[in-house]
Image (cartoon, rainbow, N blue to C red):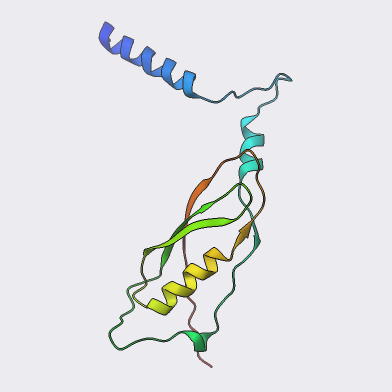
Length: 129
């Protein structure tokens, strides 16, 4: 048997969740959430510059620790801002190029959608000439 206290807490939690939820149905009765998700989904319009292999220099004291992870924000305009290295690759040049690549990426405009917090793992494909 469920106690009154547990039932009150459950009803309260449901009411709070409903009060905080965005309106899901328009006046026409169509589901709005799917349209918002589709409209607000960022899509890459232009990738940042890709460095040439000869530009990557490995210093004596550096050791590869993996691939870099870059965190950033996508503005409604599609511009990337506040990009920073969240996890280093261990190679300063690789981190620098990954950061510049992300900063140079442009997304579609999404007016009314707000700022999106994002991060990307930049995989490096090493090739020999």
